[in-house]
Image (cartoon, helix red, strand yellow):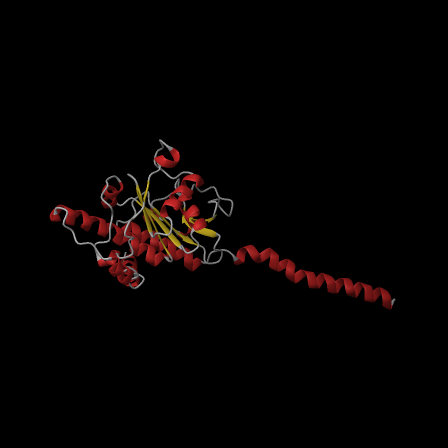
Amino acid sequence: MNTRLGTVGCWIFLLLAMKGPAQSLKTAPDSDAPSAAQIAELVLANHILASEGVIDAYGHVSVRSEKNPSHFLLARHLPAGVVTADDIIEYDLDTKPVHDTTATGYSERFIHGEIYKVRPDVKAVVHLHTPDLIPFTVTSVPLRPIIHMAGFLPAVTPNFEIRKTAGMTDMLIRTNALGHALAETLGDKPVALMRGHGAVVVADSLHVVAGRSYYLGVNARIQAQAIQLGAGNVTYMDPEEGRKSGAQDGFERAWTFWKSKQEKK
């Protein structure tokens, strides 16, 4: 009798011991879910970039998941200015939705996944179509840093030519292969232009990528104006000046200003 009770007791002990780990495994995926705070900041970034004229109806911004670096967050197929928390989709680095969803993603979502895949230092990505940039994507005039707020720009900003990878297309990054080719053009730079299209901007935070994206357009506009006035005699930033000014304050003051404007709406 005691033997039987002892045997039953052992089984109960084993079942109880197994229950804890089983529950942990069951809840493990939830522990990787992005936080509400990170989703809210991504929504805010969408609204800021749209409000400041950095992103038009077709641009987009993403952020690498804080909980799982192999995932990133990006809105569904909507204009940035109307994005809400319910519109955020979580993707893996192959740009596949992590959870079943009927939502349609951006056609150029592959830009983000392929950059995150090859650039572990990148935490945020913006794809934009700033008109002031386009002349520098279709001429031999290189985009160069000319204002101190754009000291992050490299001495030579790479320019992605989609025809070298895919021939005649609609010029959109619709596949992982095209996203990878763009990521290769970007290399270790913070910015890559896209011929006749726009640019991609990367950084280690949403605040910095927003600041870089905004002042990228400002620099392009001022450089074009300086070229027109200077008849080729334009003074650009020295690389040392760029190294000293490029970090700014992480563009925190700009982010605070832009955020305050959103809160007043």
